[in-house]
Length: 451
Ligand SMILES: Cc1cc2nc3c(=O)[nH]c(=O)nc-3n(C[C@H](O)[C@H](O)[C@H](O)COP(=O)(O)OP(=O)(O)OC[C@H]3O[C@@H](n4cnc5c(N)ncnc54)[C@H](O)[C@@H]3O)c2cc1C
Picture (cartoon, rainbow, N blue to C red):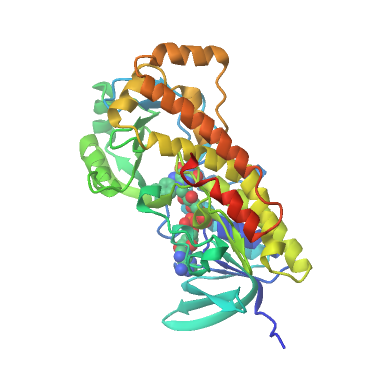
């Protein structure tokens, strides 16, 4: 006789994905356990995340409380690697959110919805039973424990602690290659107001202007600075792909601090790796769902994953609610989550992965030229932040060709990547309706290399 599992749902990892999922499934009356390895949710992850303003309502999660919000820049510009050329962005569709504060808000929401939160509990592996995931093993205070559940969720971020131990045939265990990651650090630092004011007067910086210097250390790299002299702080972000030829994000961050001179102690902030490849081919196996960074649900061109994690939690909670109601946890019962995510948000994320693969091949001088010539436009950059497929008007296309004709390789490269991105996006919108190993295999076969 099969024993009754300890929980309906065990969620590993109390980040945005895990907390939102735990809250939503608990609200449906299920018995939910949320496990977090740190001593409190959000610990070590106190950076600011810029999140699509519409994401909270779209994912039906609480909007960040005032303490979880940060100052919105009045204006944002992209500058070229040499800093000589500038593109002004339209009003930003993003809101800066304090990740740690917001995660704790979501964790309280989960607990208030009836989920149980256990911190200091490191999930070590899935429990397998009859070929299905049936819970997790946990190490807490040096003691190993086995916890069983009808359904388990891997929300452990880039570590993907549970999914990496699943059978290869589930298409959940892909490792994230270093070339598909970006290392990022974002800190809020106090500033010496007099020195900062002097730097502004000398024209070294503009007060309350967010400046994103892009492409200085490889096409993907970004150094973003926002100074508020009156507020007495600077918001500094560095993102860089790992490479033996490039500084790390932390090294570059230290360099930016030195260059700015007037920056003082850290008020809050942290750093870490972000996966920037398209989502995993599948997002569920027997007894298991995978969400957020663990499932690589990040906008590949910008490294933004919060909105996708929340949207995934919303979709997965509905599927899990239905599956639990039917007394099921098998992959077929969990497949609706895969189909709904992949054919919508997943298709968009993959569109931007194709473009990211192309821009990865560009050098700093290409980025300099694209910005200088006005070939890279504000609308294009903003579309990758939201994300929304970029559809230039015919007149804008003609202007692009006129501005860029001296570098046909770049223009043709962009055009080819754009067409390929559309093709691959179309493929995602035809994601298998039901799980079938053969169908999934043939769907995925057309993806690698995007050629
Ligand atoms: C510096 C930086 C800046 C960023 N800026 C942005 C931005 O501007 N906009 C944006 O949208 N995104 C941004 N991101 C990415 C964003 O933070 C992630 O996409 C998002 O947090 C993913 O949420 P998640 O819940 O999937 O995973 P995570 O936030 O990674 O949460 C995973 C949780 O699981 C826990 N955990 C891990 N292993 C275990 C284990 N074995 N057992 C138990 N618990 C475990 C972790 O402690 C953590 O609490 C940034 C990331 C970094 C590093």
